[in-house]
Image (cartoon, rainbow, N blue to C red; front, side, top):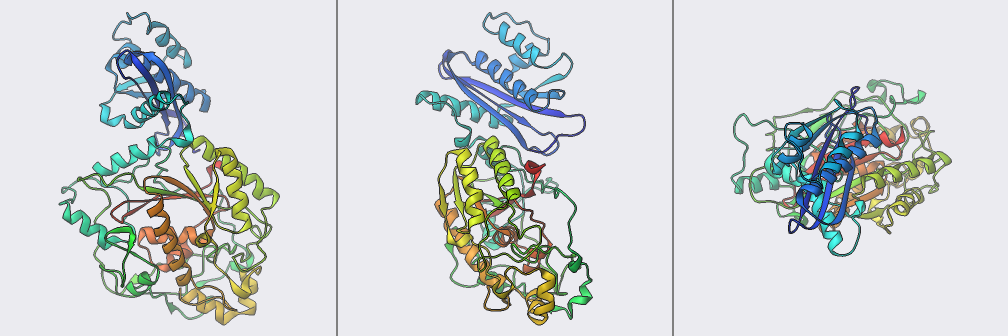
Length: 518
């Protein structure tokens, strides 16, 4: 959970509804961080037979109490589409109905006078709270309580915004997505502001999180790019993208038979780029080299998001890196070809912390884990809190680092200098002793992505995996070259998120969030 600005202002959006007025009724409320749009808390409840206005007031009370539970000294900006509640709570209209007087008084007692201001907003801007209220009423109709873990309100709110607002970077099916938008006649008007927004629990904020601490570079990693030897070609070409398993224009499930269509093709040459974490659960953080320079200009793709037919709710992958093992603080290569270490005591604590954070968000619907022990332990901690089962997928395993398993980056540099230089220079180079190249891992991860997005369309799925698979998913979603793997920070037990749409487009929503560990 991120901390709001120093003033600790919070936004509360609330709504209520009744199917009959009076009739079966429910309310919903969401607390948002005004700086990032991140969902900090959700509340919803079926309240039996009541009027719309009573349900709206109960939603207001629930939202204010949720805000107070987070920050008792906060100032609160309430936004509702009920003109009645906004005007009455602002003191401009009198409260006459006997059922609403005690609810208004209760709302007024949650925070001291002067710390809450009210704003009326149109209903279409209150979709998150409205959906929560309807979920509560739907649950009540079935004789159940509303469950946060089953909610898709935040996801639906984000999908609605994406349908109306240009947002987010294109995924690795850039050409297919561009064709889909062109077919819909869908370019933003000149002067339209493009932004990435992220509110709603399932939306997962679109602003990348700052690392929880400054990069902790090991002594053996403090050397210049020149010390790594002569620069080599990274071969970020259409050929590599085809190897990585890019999707066809028909969507994630429809894999193209040939190479990627579109603007790919000219190679990018770059200095041998030392990795930010040497690739996978390789725990060696190194300096970042200068960015690669394209040999010729590349046409920028159209931004994601357009006005047109609703593409439906995306498949959202919440990407969780496992907690620490004994090798993590020592920054040693730890892939799928080594000893398969368990979580350390610190890693177990991290797993519990992330489980608590995900339970508070309440939007995870499925859990899929790498087969390696450290991931299965992390996934089990989350599953126990959410009451979900864990499914294991071999495609989510970490890179096999061959003879480098268990070694530090400095030790690999000392023992296998030529192999290391080759590995840093090309994604097609494998570690010493028959390990996997990044190109091989990218093909495996892309195939896993396509299979899972097809199976979980419209759902929010937690993938518990490793550094290389997570970075690869982010890289492909951004359409970034292979060397970008070396320019991402990914901490133990961090959360990232990518949403995948039906047209083959993707949107990175979050990267390396470690706020739950602070």
